[in-house]
Length: 116
Length: 111
Image (tube, rainbow over all chains, first blue to last red; front, top):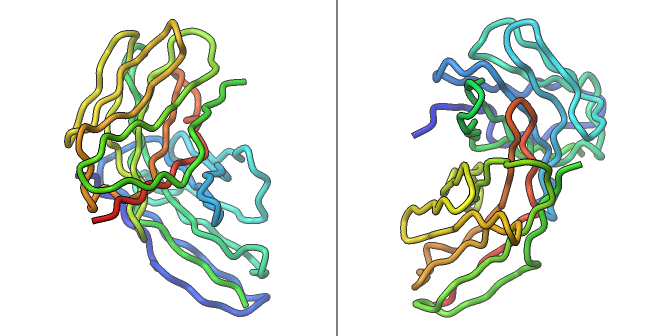
């Protein structure tokens, strides 16, 4: 059973507001990820981190930012929310294993964001 | 770059029917292959995985075999239940790189 948590689970907010989506894991995993999942189900990687003080942009350009000050915590921030940010956001983590060992990704339950 | 292709959904089956969801991939070398499942309102859960050619992953009655010669990793279950209704994602990863997910296949099982 993976121990990765996201809060809030649901968020309805007005345009222009600043929001932070929280993600925490208790597995001591080095690598963490944020995905955006559109209504068509497809996953888009927007940010990832190899560890503390590491942040990288993913395949899909996003106006959000992330930080990694502690191993277990990887929050995502939108400075000014817009209706185009409405989506489901999934956080995930995995171990950085040695070569030859299969990395497995564990997901949180997701945050469903609606920007009015 | 690497890519994963899945059969288009939605797939609708009656309870106790046989399930196959096709997955093929394009990648260099020998990636690890995965099936994830997403139940309504939840995140993705690992269903099964295989790390080398001819490996068979299995879990909860689901199976998939890593076929290098056909670059495939088809998901099968002999008898589906209503509780199997979900979205299924095929994925691959090379060491040191990020996961590559397929577009997902929605399965609906009718009683």
